[in-house]
Image (cartoon, rainbow, N blue to C red):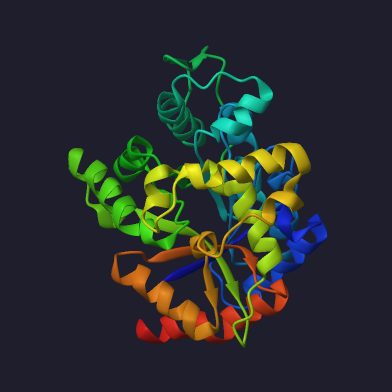
Length: 335
């Protein structure tokens, strides 16, 4: 089992996220991911600083999208990061949350097509090829090629999402996948969709690095970071897929009152409407509780877990607990 730490603005400043990223490397994590959500801190800045202060962990964005960031800009940034960190860059890519794009007035008519075409041009650019392209979403001239040598010819592309078509495509063509597992019980459906995509193109699914994204709150005695977790659920819960929510008995209808209060009174007020049932979207409890849930995911085929906010009442202590108890447990199993 590989372990990634996934950070976002809920941890506050860039400085705080950098501190956690460096701490993750010291505590045995394999990768560090930083969210790239609209109107929040840029993952490009944070990841670059973490890259400068670490030596081994892989570095990825969760998740860049080809609507708000042109594929050329994605290629340029990650190529430079890969060069600077001697091959540690990972590309987290998806279509972007529809709600975010609505804020910006951006059309979202063929999201899967745009992701597919972006994957194709990125691979051409990083391979040192001319990326002239005449697609439905991307139309590039023969002037589209990198003007400097690439550190390596391939940066792994991890495709994120929950939708059936996007998961199937990621299983067929992604170097890795970042399926959203809020709740963790969505694992069965997500795995089947990814495997179906791989089967359709005759691909060995074991070639795909599935880095399941979870929310987690861990503490020695099992106290939960309840306030930040409720805010996370209030903010992102309405954007989760209906099918995933249904695996723990929830639906979009349950989130309608939360959305209404959020629009009228703000996130703090909306978070107060988050129910205990909704907290089941996250893994939470003692190290043993968290181990049991991660072990469940492992038995269903997950071999890489990307652990996200809120981490726990004290995020730094939580990273240390994961490094002291959880990661060694799974490393020992692999011997």
